[in-house]
Amino acid sequence: MGVGAPNMVCCIREYKTEGGTIPAMARPREFDCQLALDAALRVFWEKGYEGATLDDLTRAMGINRPSLYGAFGNKAQLFDKVLERYASGPAAYVVDALQAPTARACAEAILRGAADLCTGPENPGGCLVVHAALATGGTGDCVRKALVEFRARGDRAIRERFERARVEGELPEGTDPAGLARFIAVVVRGMAVEAASGAAREDLEPVILMVLKAWPGAVDS
Image (cartoon, rainbow, N blue to C red; front, side, top):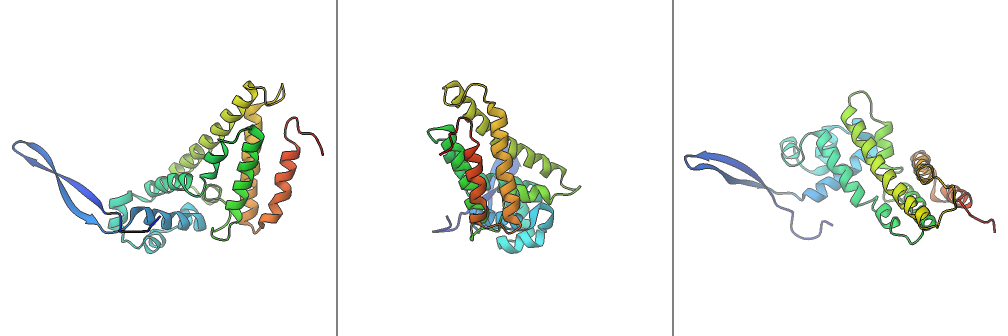
């Protein structure tokens, strides 16, 4: 991302005439919206939603407040766009993991992907979603709701993958796919908290191995 000419996004204004309303092109915004979103993502990741000020955001994004509002809306709307950017970028390992051939392989890919993301030296540490949720106070109700729905979408996707595994006979009879999905999700969030507190990748590996050892139908070697 970010290689080549800037992404020129134009504002559309409407002008009324006797013949109706016609759109007119305003001056283009001369910045790359995707790079600006990446910069905002990092600020929110480092500081949480409430900890990230508009000055922090505009400074990192290299734009002024009118440009921010014009391109992304207010702070909460910007955060919504950042969440989607996070899902399709740093957290895209989840989508890949859901394509694994078995439910156990899916769980392992999610756990290892989360551990790599949360402890990666190129990242602020921890998880954007967990950090933002923990750092959101009373003024961020709409953001809390967005975070709850974001996590719920991920949980549903994992649960549906495990439900398919149960139908296909991969999981032992009596396995609860919803409970298993929640187990994986809670471990992932716990690892994110640990990583944000300074845990290294090697500190999280025993956690992953313990989860896999407890997998339904697993046989001790």
